[in-house]
Image (tube, rainbow, N blue to C red; front, top):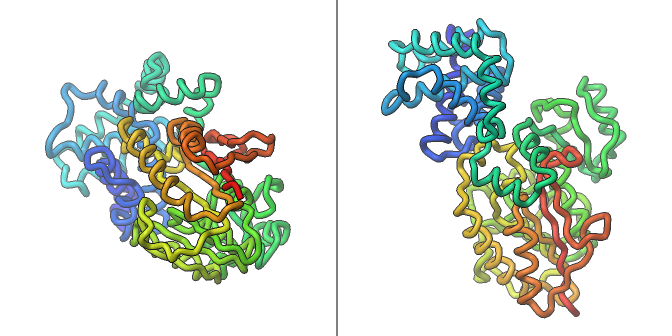
Length: 432
């Protein structure tokens, strides 16, 4: 075991937080590089620390500011991120105090800030002692306690005045792990039995025959027959997309903005004879579509394409189109807390414009009588209800049909609802 085992995970988490907050990188970009040489246990700890710190960034910043005579700047900025990670351990994470402080102090050495080890120790010890008073002060200031940027908190309260507190609480919680069973290989009941044999706890009930919710997250490699393609990880809200699309045998299907390929694979698991074209503008992310299809033993045509253009299209109309539109991802913050600090209010208008362009480009590619399922992982009306209303108003041959189980035309999942992510669905049909 490395002399710096506990410190290495703290240092990696601090660097990840720094890269998100100061350099605008996503956690999914930063963490794999920073944790490449760590043990599995330390990788897990670094991830938990980075994700947790970014969930509660405003109150953690407040705690640090109360302990320093002046802010850390310049070359000492990475040390501020380390203090954030240390403070998170002692407060919201509830880690063992001595081990948390000791490992975080040692991490200062790994970050080449040995001269500041005394400062790190003093700040964390003070937070440890003052936590009850700090908690009270944070609770008295909603802009700290909700741990969201002001623009996003305001948007949530505007769109969902009755459910705002619930949405914010869900965003600040860790998401559960949902599995999607490949029903070409097994059934839900059979796979539940395999999980039990492997000592992995799962909830007995789920709203879909393909879905299983685990009691706690596990490494995917520990899942029975994962490498054989029997199971994938996919949130329950996202799994509904393929049921709503309702592809039929032999149909020609377009999965637009398909990476990383979860929905492409799910279409083929349910309809193996469907002719699926999966497109995405990001060539690098499409490698994950290929990887997922190969693991699952499925075949689809995968193509790099810009969905605002049609130069990739072969001229054959599609029976169904799944448009999982580029969006603010405000429905999946609990899985990606860095979204809170990377997304800007000005992004929403730009994203809505892009969504509109894609809708207008894809609609002529749909057969008369065909179906387009519009989906986002957003909870903002500009990207969802307002987007669809604008499209219907300007598209004479578009008909909006029931999508939600209640018969409602649209289906907006809020974060935490049915233990799922925030998701939006609307089903459009083209007049024959």
